[in-house]
Image 1 (cartoon, rainbow, N blue to C red):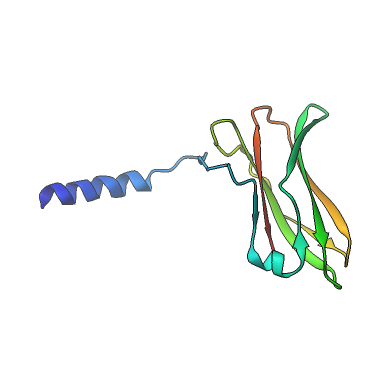
Image 2: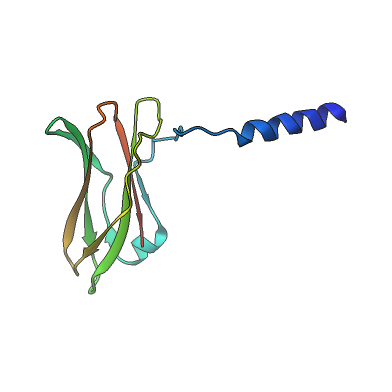
Length: 122
């Protein structure tokens, strides 16, 4: 019994440790809340390119509805090891007019950036 309690205590201590950088599974480059799809917004995974010596990610949002839709989004940048790159980008907002499209993008000067994830929510 004492070994179990000691093991649980050690597990609790280890789970309480944190660092400034988080390792994430970056295989999913696009995350959309179901409410975004329900509102009529569609998009593809973000495309990465180099622009003026910086990494750039972009995606086009399409509004299939008869009314404008306001979408919140954030790009998350990762290195080859799946570590999130600091500083964190702030969430942004865009309004997509009815039956229109809007390109959203992000740039990072961190040359170790090799992966990106786009998170969309209402």
